[in-house]
Length: 105
Image 1 (cartoon, rainbow, N blue to C red):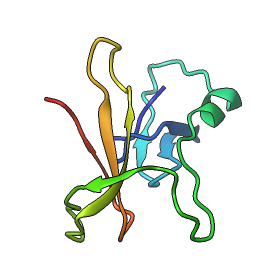
Image 2 (cartoon, helix red, strand yellow):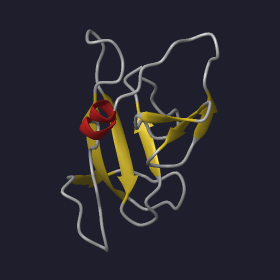
Image 3 (cartoon, one colour):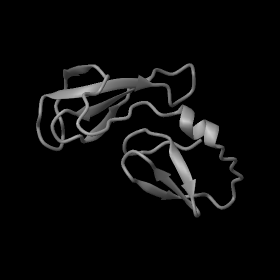
């Protein structure tokens, strides 16, 4: 599995590229690696869907958006590294929908 460096979502394989379904970020696939892609993996990784202005089920917190300066963001945590390392916190601005992550380093 590959994860987006921009927003942390799982990347999907498309024509020699890894493409993020959330933010659209693209990265070339390593030609020397073998990959197995299944629909079940991709469907099971969906964290949030939002349609037509519906409110998100994600909780909100005080967090400074680096894009617009807003002070509220929705957040969630996801284990994207080894199991013995802490989870990564992801934020989505409530105003501009900018996505960013915060690691415990």
